[in-house]
Structures are given as structure tokens and as C-alpha cells.
Length: 369
Image (cartoon, rainbow, N blue to C red; front, side):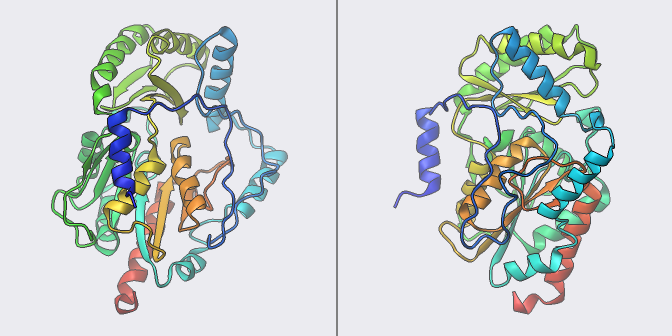
């Protein structure tokens, strides 16, 4: 049997291009063995425009793009009785992971918990300047203790080196650039069943192209106040958190004019950010599977992966867990969103509380795990 790691390396060497994906979010089917049924496909929540793969040709596309940028901003949701009803319905389908902690622990008994954590909006608050998205000392201490108890990985759209400078924990696995830059612990891990070191970069040949697009985007967007282009090594981010809404259309056109010249790159959207990535079959979900195999949990029935994230890009990992029927995803959000996650937490402080409860549970009865 060919391993997932071997398939990944073969895929990377062949530079497989993904086809264009239609807009919309597919809700994963519930498989036997899953710990919790998914939200029903017809969940009557507040409709949002979700563009999975933003197309970049034509004025209509620009308008749809700007509408999607606007929908991604929760500050535009006015609190109304209708919204309150939607939120109550959504919480029933995606209950608090803190409130359901005992049920979660019951589902994990007899299995190895493996933790996957997004960074921005999960371990650190979303801030106006992405270069100042620092995690608190208390959060760092909690994540350090978590890694002593369970295999733990950071999976982020950020450059791996940059997120490492934020987290500063050598005992973790790091998957940067949406999983296109994966590296194992610098100081080793007691949880790793595989002796060889982990380093995987399936999009290496795109580096010159990414650097060129970065330079062009910086030049093209410099006339838009508040726009910030970030080079995440294997992908790019155009942050519009500090851009006036009336300038979003202008920014969309600027980005379009650059990206349309590079058909091997695709455009996706996150929280107040537009992201440019290589069109290879790789995302945070693939990174999760790769890391599970790297840790020695390939085809294991006694593994319990937990993925916590707040962004659209984390949906790929949430869906993988639903399809596998193992573990679960936790969405970090104060607002209702279409998601494949099973549970929810409202903000990084609640994430820290949940992680600390996991640590306390593990340390209280270590012999029974």
C-alpha cells in the first residue's frame, strides 16, 4: 500500500494542478463512528456569500468578490431578533466545546488525542497589523503544557518561520503556508512514533513565481491606504482589515490585474484577507493527514484528532475529520457561519480555557490514558 506521505511527495514532484472549484461550501456527510452528527444541510442560518475559489475575470466577478469581502466582516452584522434566532439555532448545531467537554472526553477514551491549532484568531487575537499578532505568555504556557500531553501542531496560512517566532515553542510541529511548508519539532517529540525528521514542501518550484507576484502586488496596491501584502513563502496574503470599505473595489481590481497573469496561482479568501496560492492539490486538510502519518497514526482507528481554527481555510481540515469519522473540528467564531466543524468556541480566551481543561484532564489521571 502506498502511504499518504509517498503520494504527497509524488504529487508534489508532478506539480498536479487543481481544477477550478465552484463557489459554495459543501457540508461533509456524517459517517458511522463520528462523534457528533453534522449540522443539517438545510440549516436556516443567515445566508452569507462564500466564494471558495474566487474567479478573477470580468466586472461581475469583481462585484461578487467585493460582496464576499464585505460578507467576511462580522462587523457588518447588526444585532436583530432575526440574527439572535439564527445564532441560537446555530449554537444548537455547533455547541460550545467547553460546555460539551465531558462528552468530548468520553468520545476520546481509549484513543490518542492529536491536537491541530490554527494561529491567527485561534491562539492570538485578530489585530489590525498582522506583524503584531502576538500570543500571550499565558497562551504560550498553555500550549507548551498541551504539547507535553499530546502531539501538537500549528497549521497556519502564515510563513512557517514567522509563526515560529510568534509561538517560540520548539517541541511543536509547524505547517506554514496552508500546509505547504511542514517541519517537525526542532528538539524532538516523545509522541513521534517515526524516527525520521519531518520536512515537506510540495510547492517549492513555485517560489520564484510567488516572489515575483509579491513584488508586483506591493507596487500595484501601494496607492490603496491600509492595504498590506504579506509574503508567506509559498503563498501571499493581501490584508484589507485597515482598508476603507469604499476602497475595496479598487483593491479587488488591483489584485485581479496581477493575479490574472499567473494561471498557476489561485485566489481564495479568509477573514479580512485575500490569499494567493499555487494551484496544487494541497491544503490544511492534506497537511493534517500528512502529519498524522508522519506521527505514525496512518490507518489507525485509535487516534482522535482535534482541529481548532477560525478561518475559511480551516474548513478543509474540518471536512477531512468528518469524512474520516475520527475526532472533530472546533470553529472559533462569535457569529454563525456555515462550517464542517462539530463544536464552537467564541474567541482565543475560550480556546485557552479548552486547552487547559484538556491538560488538567490528562494530568489528573495519566495512568488511564
